[in-house]
Amino acid sequence: MSRTFTRPKIALIGAGQIGGNLALLAGQKQLGDVVLFDIVEGMAKGKALDIAQMTPIQDFDIKVSGTSNWNDCAGADVVIVTAGLPRKPGMSRDDLLDTNVKIMKDCATNIKQHCPNAFVIVVANPLDAMVYTMAQVTGFPKNRVVGMAGVLDTGRLQYFIADHLGVSVEDVTAFVLGGHGDDMVPVRDLCSVGGIPVTQLMTKAEFDPIIDRTRKAGGEIVGLLKTGSAYYSPAACAIAMADSFIHDKKRVLPSAAYCQGEYGIKELFVGVPAVIGAGGVEKILEVKLNAEDAAALKLSAEHVGDLVAEAKKRL
Ligand code: TXD
Image (cartoon, rainbow, N blue to C red; front, side, top):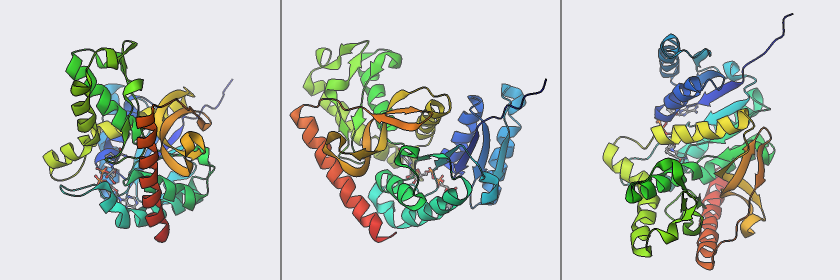
C-alpha cells in the first residue's frame, strides 16, 4: 500500500545572513523542504548546496535548494521574508523604510502570485511597516501574515534577566509588546522566573537597566558588527514561529499581528501576545496592563501608525 506524504514547503525569501541561518535551522529541525531564494542567485544556490551537503553529517532528510526564480517557490506552505537591507552603525530601523518598502512590494507581488496559500512571516525592517506592506500588497487574510520581532525582543529580555539572576534561561518568561523600535514595551508585570514574579526578585533599580538594554540590544550588536545586524537570534525566532504553525503548536508568541481593537489598537500590525497554530495567527490574547505599560503600548502603536503612514505613501 503506498500513501503519499509530502513535507511542508518552506520558501525563504532573502538568502543573506538571516536567510542562510533560517535554512540551516529549518533543516536541523526537519521542518520541511527548503527553497532559498535571492536576487543574488549564486548566494542562494551556494548556501543551499552547502547545507544540502551537511544533511548526511547531521542526519536530516530534507531537500534544500537555492534559486532566483520565483517559480521554484510555487506552492510554499510557509514563506519567511528577510529580503531587505540591514542597518549600519548610526542608522535607525526607520532609515531603511525607503529602500525596503520597494523590496517588500516586489516580494509581496511575487508571493501573491506564486504562494497564494502561504503563511507569511515577515522579518525585514522596519518590521512594523514591512508586515503592513506585505499584508496590503498580497491581500492575504490577516491571520496569514505576521511579523517577527517580539519573539526576538522578548528573548533578549529573558536572556538579560537570566544572566542577571544567574538562573536558567529555561525558567524565565517575559513579554515585550508594541512596535519593534526604541519605544517597544517590555512588560515587567509579565516577567517571571520559575513562576516567581520578577518584581519579587529584582528591584526597579536593577530591572530598569535591563529594560533599557533590551530596547537597545539590536543597536548594540549593529555597533559591534559594523557591517550589519543580528542574524542568529532573529533566525531562531522566525523558525519558532514557523514551527508553531507547521506543527499546530498554538504557542503564545509575541508577534506583530493585525489588531482590530485589541489593546485599543485598530487596523495596525503591532507586537501582541498571539496564538500561532495551523490557522496562522489564531487568536490575540489580551492581558491587563498597568497604567504605565498601557500608555507606553499606546505610544508605541502611535509610532507604528506614523511609520505605516510613511510606507503607504510609497505603495
Ligand atoms: O527582529 C527583526 N525583525 C530584525 C530584522 C532583526 C534583525 C535584522 N532585521 C532585518 O532583517 C534587517 O534589518 C534586514 O532588513 C533584514 C535582513 O537582514 P540580514 O542581516 O539577513 O540582511 P542581508 O544579509 O543583507 O540579507 C538580505 C538579503 C540579501 O541577500 C539581498 O540580496 C536580498 O536580501 N534581497 C532580495 N531577495 C529577494 N528579493 C529581493 N527583491 C531582494 N532584495 C534584496
